[in-house]
Length: 456
Image 1 (cartoon, rainbow, N blue to C red):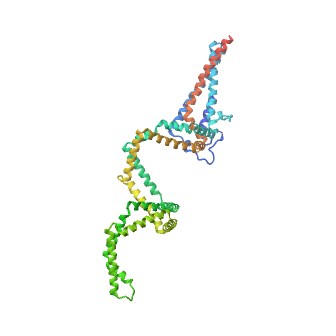
Image 2: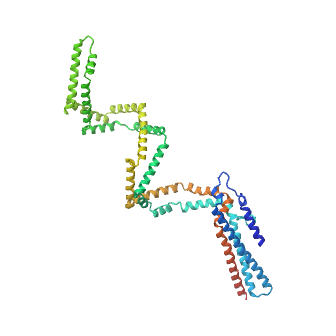
Image 3: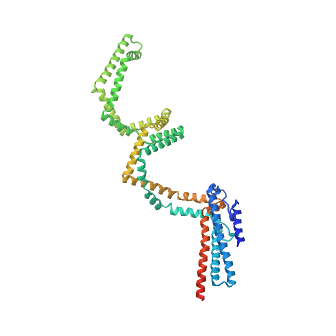
């Protein structure tokens, strides 16, 4: 028995140095080996030393009951008395229990005595199957909709998040992180790509929607509210001032358009007359709110607003004009350049801690946090949103999540996986051997006692 034990221990130490798997199992081709399972940390080494100590203890107990059995049988044969038979029965059953449990524990990690007995070396030979089973177990028991909702509902994310956001320091931190993320995103984006997307989106949206009726309704409201009068006042005032400053240019233009056969003094008189009439008209338009020309302009704008909404020809002309304007390169360049201006404005606001953007974000976060912490309705909404999002992820990507477990286990090297698992749970498994020895001895003693009593 001592020789068998020494052989077992020697085989275990030898196989601990080998790179191949027990029973010829290796990591699957094409699957990278997990380095965490291929190396031993100092903590793993210490655990493995503990396993060796417990193995020696369990093996020593086996040797002890074997020696007791030999001595008890010798005493029994020597006529020592009835007690020797009881001790022999107990120690014999203890050996059987110890050997049976040694076989069971060893069969988990390797072939006992190196003999490829069926259904042994379970962990290295069934590693991939165990990974699949573990993945299925996690998917069915941890990634189900009911479990996810129950766990998230018990956490109370809405109230906790609200209480956390309601603290000004936390709101400042979130604002700073959002600003950093925003700047990073805008830095990564290429202006040319965004400009192309923005220009194409605006052009497509403008071409897809008729603008005539909308412009007509807006113009109709402006005229009804008198909003156009300020524009008219500005135009006629600027026209009057321009006429005052450019008297000679106006007269020269009129004289230059006169026939060549007319006398110059006549052309001069006509130019002065035209200039005075233009100046009088501009002055009256400026100073007389009820001027007939203003009324005519009001009627024109009213009719034009109505035509934009109902007249087919007018709407068609507006659409053609819109297409011509959008098709011009200058307009496309203007649309594209809008992104550059917007990006610069957003980046500057995100970098400035006192900018209106960051102050508004901070105030919104504090307000949201206070409401989430105090209002049950808001908490329920947040909890419901988080639950729905989590359920969607786990139900939609359940296979991908469980395949992570399966593929990870499959990538582990069988030998190192066995060593690491044994290092972590092997010490407790050695107690099974010890318990088997003790329980076997007690059971053997009880069976012998009962049998002897019945036989007597």
